[in-house]
Image 1 (cartoon, rainbow, N blue to C red):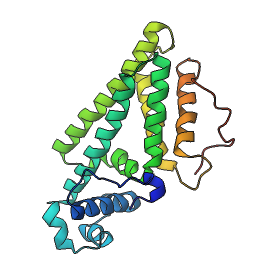
Image 2: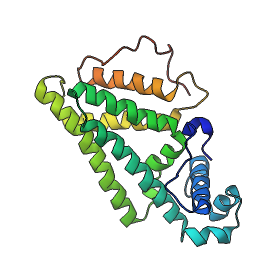
Image 3: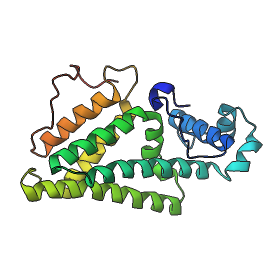
Image 4: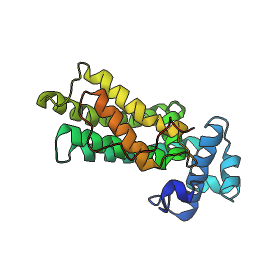
Length: 220
């Protein structure tokens, strides 16, 4: 289950009701992140939730339904972060800075959830995968919109918008793979570092200063 450090005190998956359904979903996140979707059984999930295997089927018809619910909620949150930044005030550099800080910060603060959301896509049923891919395309469009605005105003030097968009999103998402609460940086500090790196990548002057960020390489 996500720790208090990972959730910042926020009750994880508060949008999922009733409580038993939420407990099962959080247990599934933990199991999928630790063992992978295919190696996890419904008995594993029920046991982590302190429930019987039969109780799981009251709330979720299949293991894949659980994964879909996790993936949909996670991708909705990711999309909200990026579209909010894209529609924000300020220049393109400020909006890209805000997008990367928030997106990276979420992937670090919720790294267990994000690993499942971002790396178990192929385990979804075809119709569910298509639904999630559509959300990912909207996230891609939000970042590409900011980059295109920056190119239009002369803030960014980006000769390949699709390729750069993919590079930015891939860089941000990968944080979920390696981030550890025992590392040297907090989620906010990693967000600031990555915002600085992305702005340099697109030829923009970084917003703010990285002077206060801890020295050293990526935490593992």
